Length: 138
Image (tube, rainbow, N blue to C red; front, side, top):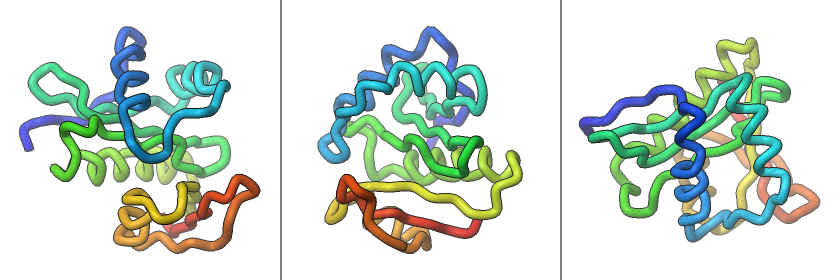
């Protein structure tokens, strides 16, 4: 891989939204995304994978509650290790903020579920929206 991870710049929001909207699983339905995005941009940061001047994925960890808020890779760039690297960047954000455990949710029966299980995260329940709740020691 020839890319690198860095913090997103404000002018890259459109590309990040493009990636978020392109995924086949965990489709965007949350109308508060804009408000959430603004908070991450100003505080915890949104991490992007950049390669040859193009953003191919992004992630973010929520330092307020120790959750992984986002992890998405452009479908054309999947299965190259970009998601794994961005996932670690989000986990590092939480570690640096003092969190020793982290949580996230995802739909059951998805590639994301398999990804988190392979990363050593454990399903500890189901949310009111039917998503699996995962937890891990950081």
